[in-house]
Length: 276
Image (cartoon, rainbow, N blue to C red; front, side):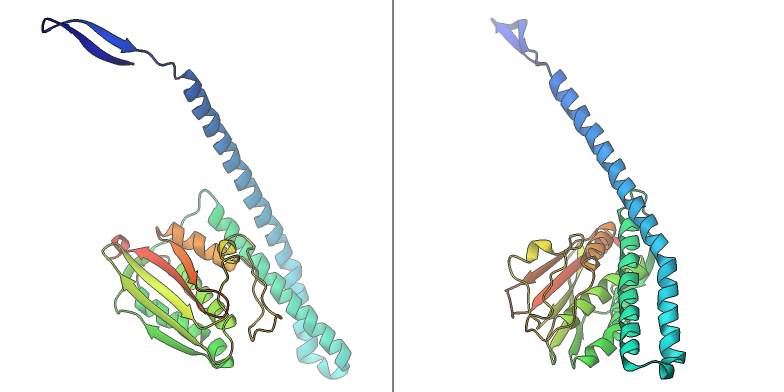
């Protein structure tokens, strides 16, 4: 309802108004809400299906990995080179499938509508040092130099294990996608609202066409075996999981690159308001 007074000789003698029937808008809004509810229910169902499927795969994987390790460690002398090679492929495949099922379970937990994180006060600067130590052996294998340039005492409220997972994932990706003798730099900055962490590499970079696939489910960009001195890629879920984790902490994650052969930089931020 919209109305305005009608004046005559300085006095209000009536009202002029319009009535708008918004019944259709209300019904349309109600329909959208019902559809969103159904979509959320379907998403929860899909998440539960993935979780149960991945869980059921874990038991046979334990047996496959266990017996292949047993053959290689205790009975290798009784096997010829061809059989040993086959068993190693079985073990490699089981490890890869174990990683995939683990990441599917992790993604399904983070997608659940009732997901809960357990926050604690942590020093982000110290956590970064822990992450660098974790991936140091990978960097050494490829003769990479890791430069840490972060400010001290970045005290934040986070779930430590989850942020550890994000940082090690970004560092591992940088190591794998950078040709030998490269440089990985992890640094920090801040404004009044956020701490921003960046992981920069001198690797093969990301093209404009590849950029939209980052941070999506199974958005793996296959570049191994195309003439680049890089390691095989992962499952395509790592960056998707990292995005979910950072968003649950109230932050954002993104990437920049000038194209193929020009390196890339991944950023994420965490709100300072969550700090001590």
